[in-house]
Length: 335
Image 1 (cartoon, rainbow, N blue to C red):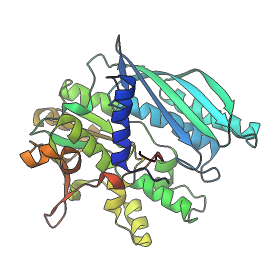
Image 2 (image 1 turned 60 degrees about the horizontal axis):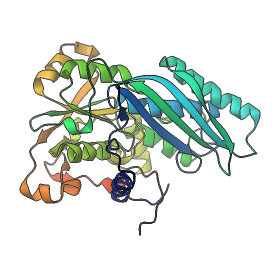
Image 3 (image 1 turned 60 degrees about the vertical axis):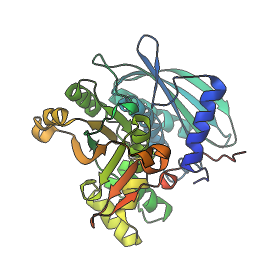
Image 4 (image 1 turned 120 degrees about the vertical axis):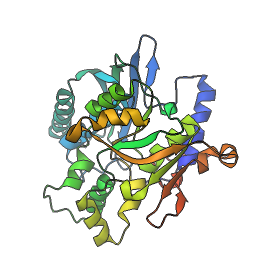
């Protein structure tokens, strides 16, 4: 929906670190003294949603869920949220009531309390949620914890949210309930799954959520951990409804899975022994193995951000992941 390329976005984040002198920026949440976690996410009309394409109740749910997903991405425990709303004068009280019903519904579902916030006017609807939480008693998982020999694992499936967005934008959704629409409008933060992974690996692993797509998540893990990661395409879970919609649209469902974004699944790296613990859960194991972690080569070391993550296709070709194709949030004109 906008033009900033992923490499520009990440470069800007590095500049912000320099401008602010902060060493806490880099993972899904800031880890504060005393083990507190804090994160903020903003949804803006025309960038992250379009008024009329999503109900206000679903928008409220989604705004909270995507923030709780940041806590899940570090295996933390969310406790409170702050809601900051900028609304145009055209927004009715009925719409606001539905919005806050959705916010409260998601918060209650995950035992989180709405603790305050801010209200102001603005040209478009903008909703910012700050989530406050705590580090899990068994530790925290960062993006930088992957090691050569680890398995690449994930929860759920990928591409469904992009398929749901496609139906909405193409005007092909007649209001009927469907898996991909539900995944796009009401994502589920994988908190319990994150805690299961943390217990299995005893804090020795890496974790991120797939807010900007599976490809971007894997690239971020590889860069932060200074490793090389390979996704095996045939192992990437894609829901049948997503496959069918992609086929009707003449698109590749793997492309949606890798680059569509907004699935909010967990993507992590753990060793074989830790995965055996998860396998012992049987059908209750929420994770799938979709790849593996290697050491970086000398060539990769010199250009880590562009060459550390690849996907192995069905014909055994290794193709570099393209971070610029991942979900774009922010329009910025670099100097």
